Length: 245
Image 1 (spheres, rainbow, N blue to C red):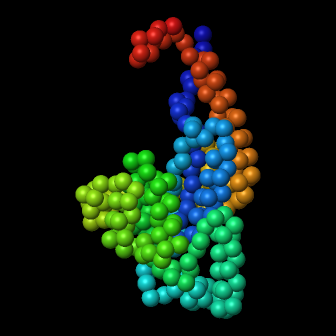
Image 2: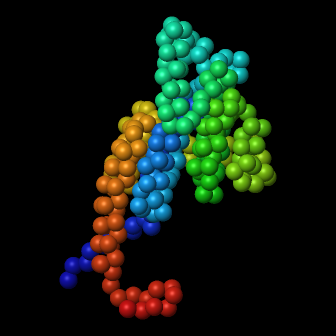
Image 3: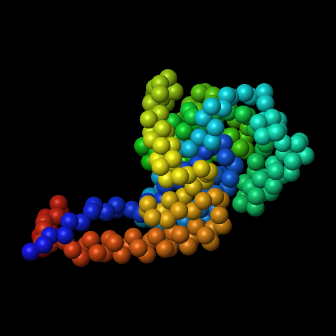
């Protein structure tokens, strides 16, 4: 008699999202994905995992340089081109109900913000951390490399002040940031946002809610079938609630 060894299945369908707080389209993509998820029948069984991705790990924080000046200097773009690009991004944000304030945007490295997200995620608060950090950086002109700002953000979403002090005085959770970025390289991810559905399907960029909804549905159909197959293959057993069959 042959025995089929089945892989352990997740209790929830995973959606991994690589993003950077400095990326405006990551915030827009978050909103569009959330719209799709809100209409999705299986949303209670979807686990969102935020993955770290630094667009420019070597970037030096400089509150004196505005977003427009940085783009002109770093990309060699004409000021008129920069203005047009910024207006395009701002309009895309408005279309999703967001307001971006690039005039007061602070040029800031996002590494410590990513460590805060990783800590928050370990306590089930990853999405909350992403939301508040996006808003702080892109809409409120906050310095996301300022440890006082990060501490305030952490407290605002329910993290313990003492643990935040420890985080910001160390390199805790830095290994997770680096692991996510290493995995991104393995997967060939070169831009964000990047969404991976149950390690099978990928959606790149801030796509429409309809695209995300289709990806969710396709993945859900296969995921639920896999759960059913696993359940059907179970032999006689006893469960922790005392039921034996």
